[in-house]
Length: 135
Length: 135
Image 1: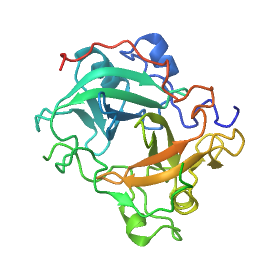
Image 2: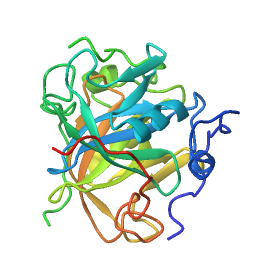
Image 3: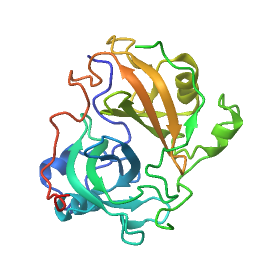
C-alpha cells in the first residue's frame, strides 16, 4: 500500500486569499501554475466527458454556483462551461482525490461536452494498443 | 463551438527520441514537465479510479505491454501500477482527448486502485457543494 507517493511534487501554497474552505485549500496540491486537474464525468452513465483545469477560484465557483467553471491554461482566464455553446455542466458532486492533485466533478451535461461536437472529448480518438489479458 | 481553446498552453516539444508513433508524439500536448494527465477508468463499470501522469515513455509502455505505467511526479521515476501492491491495471483501451493534453485509459483493475485501500482514489472524499437544478 506504499505504492503511490502521498504528497504531490510540484505543489504550490494556497493563494493568500483562497476563497475555498480552509480544509479544502490546505488539502489541494496545485501544480506550478496553481492548478489541479478536474475530471468531468456524466453522473448517471459514468462517461468521462473531458478533463479541465481549476485554480482555487474556479473550484470555489464550481462548488458554490451549481455550474462548472474552469481556468483556461491557454487563454489564462476563467471559463464557465456552456456560456458560449449552451452546453452547460450542472454540478452533481465534487470529490478530491487521495493526494489532492485531482478532482472528480460529476455533472449533468447538456449536449456535447467537446467543443468539436462529440459527446466526450475522447470519442473516436482511440490509440492503437496492446491490451492486457481478457478478464 | 469555439468555446474551448484548441492548443494547450504550456506544451513542450516531443522528446528528441520519443518512443511513440510519430502521429501520437506530435499530437501530445505536454506540460512544462513533459507530462500529460491520464484518467484511469474501469472498463465495465465506468468508475473513475484515479488520475496519474505520463510522459512519452510511460505512455509507450502502457500502449505496448498491456499494463499501465505512470511517471511519478514526486519520485521522478516510472511506476508500473501493481508491481508492489499486486493491484495491477490491465489495459483495455487508451484514447487521447481533442487537444492532446489528457488520456483516458480504460482498464481492468485488480483490487483497490487507491494506495489507501479504497476502490477509487475519490471514494469518501466528497466536498460540500451546491448542486445544479435537478434533471
